[in-house]
Length: 67
Image (cartoon, rainbow, N blue to C red; front, side, top):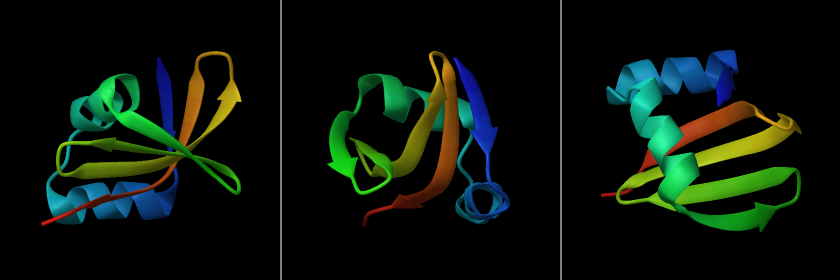
């Protein structure tokens, strides 16, 4: 799995203290919901908005946590 982060997603991950592994696990194991331009994966308290660019390439648009 190749993960490409937007600047926004990278900044949010740093701010929230999330790792690439947590984002990858959310995509692999989380519930997936269709969005207008991509998908939303929800895994535990982590939510990841992403778009599939190629067969194994994921563009992460943003990440956030629910409390």
